[in-house]
Length: 76
Image (tube, rainbow, N blue to C red; front, top):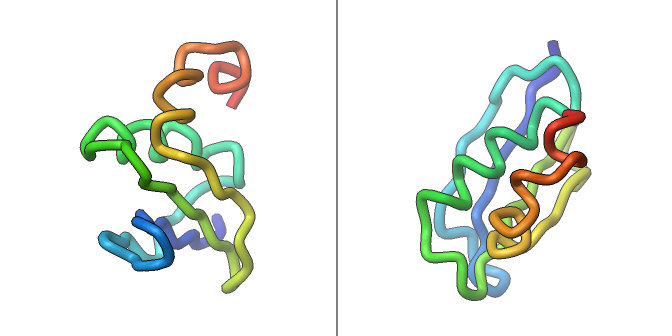
């Protein structure tokens, strides 16, 4: 298991964060991203996932919600 950091960004400001989340791999981050997106007002917010300090996923909250039922997320 690797540890991942999840951050919610409004512009360049981090408005919420969850650190050191153990996941089996980057694909396992998608359900967490969708859960975070559903919990906030998505206008202008982005969700960033970092592994070892490097950004591996950066997605707008509205886009995450729009495609959360697609095959892409189901494959994760």
